[in-house]
Image (cartoon, rainbow, N blue to C red; front, side, top):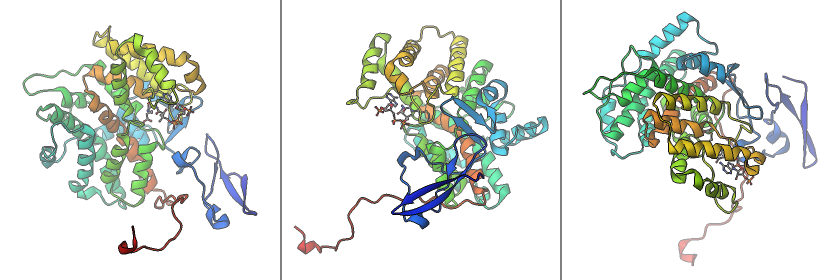
Amino acid sequence: MSNTTATITLHGNSTELPVRKGTIGPDVVEIGPLYKNTNSFTYDPGFTSTASCESKITYIDGDEGVLLHRGYPIEQLAEQGDFLDTCYLLLYGELPTKTQKADFDYRVTRHTMVHEQMAKFFTGFRRDAHPMAIMVGCVGAMSAFYHDSTDITDPHQRMVASIRLLAKMPTLAAMAYKYHVGQPFVYPKNDLDLASNFLRMCFAVPCEEYKVNPVLARAMDRIFILHADHEQNASTSTVRLAGSSGANPFACIAAGIACLWGPAHGGANEAALNMLAEIGSVDRIPEYVAKAKDKNDPFRLMGFGHRVYKNYDPRARIMQKTTHEVLGELGIKDDPLLDVAMELENIALTDEYFIEKKLYPNIDFYSGITLKALGFPTEMFTVLFAVARTIGWVAQWKEMVEDPAQKIGRPRQLYTGHAQRDFVPLAKRK
Ligand code: CMC
């Protein structure tokens, strides 16, 4: 806590508000006493200047393009560790020792199967249902299957629920995919690592032996690491808000999945790939760039821009490298989508409009191309984001529930509707 204060004068009344310092990053003005002292609220739609909580998990410097989890740069986590290393770090605050890592991997692996009755639950959906619709339903429905880990006041149950969510999300996502394509579900195989297991559950069929390609498994693992957490983004804030009422963790994560689905958030990777396909060839790019710059046209270049990053998204750099590794391994040289993507990137990085507005390619720009090369249909892209982000949601939810200062999230509003007026009986209305 610093001794600095901010003074606000309203209607002739001055009030002093404490200013708090984080380890790094901008200070925050504590506006809690404002309403009591001045009878006024603050107004910040989109929360562009509002810190909604205190957190020790993830730090982003959007101007410098920095992303740290518990202090570790995302580049080092993605290059030197595996996804479960990052999961442990997010959940427990430190990198695991060798023994802790072995124990954690074992615990997660032992929870990968879902209740057998959940398979029946899937058949209630239409085959052409969007897999995100299935995920919202099935993850919410986990509350109906795992009653012994819904008491949020019990630290043991909180941890069991966290591990269950982390371990079962890949299985549920693979089941959503299998249901979508009309193939039988594939059970998890416990001697495989998380990413290899996931690829196998998605792409193995009973009539053939499935051999995991280690380059593709490493790429999948890296995609999971890069999407694991991103501080107080829309879906994480949704999870925290849902959890602030004391709702069980499965219901809260289902709320996060619903929020992630939108094209301005997790749905952008699907939208970016659809956009590249719509552009189709390099010669049509100028037309689309012109549309994106036209103030009267709502079209936006999907996969460009970010609320926080006003510099190159550090995850996008790693993702770009991973994209090339995957395409190289699969021998994909002349992918028209990739040609469009690379040219679009060049144009956007040199065009005055994009430079002035600091619109850089974000992670979704590259992840879509990689996931397509891995064999996933576009409808699955946001589901994969949800699989990866589950650990971030769970870690942030746990941090919130364990914070002694936690209270229900209840924003206020600027009311611009009618002032009080009298009811007019129907007989007297026109
Ligand atoms: N293409 C063209 N113009 C854009 C774009 C874009 N992708 N993004 C922002 N702008 C313009 C926008 O029109 C506005 O111009 P002006 O100042 O003249 O009105 C200016 O840049 C600022 O945009 P904003 O909408 O006020 O910025 P925001 O912080 O509210 O929005 C965003 C951030 C990510 C929603 C937005 O950049 C966008 O819609 N991008 C495309 C969708 C996308 O790729 N989303 C993935 C985000 S990263 C993954 C995640 O976190 O989930």
